[in-house]
Amino acid sequence: MAVKNKRMKIARVECDLTQEQLADKVGVTRQTIGLIESGNYNPSISLCIDICKALNKRLDDLFWPID
Image (cartoon, rainbow, N blue to C red):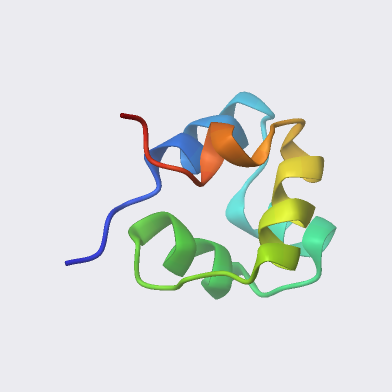
């Protein structure tokens, strides 16, 4: 079962970015951002880093499960 990435979506909304705007910043399609947020796509570490930079977050803020 896929896990939704609510932390990424919250960070994106806090930065006042649409999925399309974030996608443009990191060089992917809006659909890719939507799939990551819905838990239906496992991004590469490179894409994770680019997303974190765009949202001013650390990798563990967005992509690692909280214990």
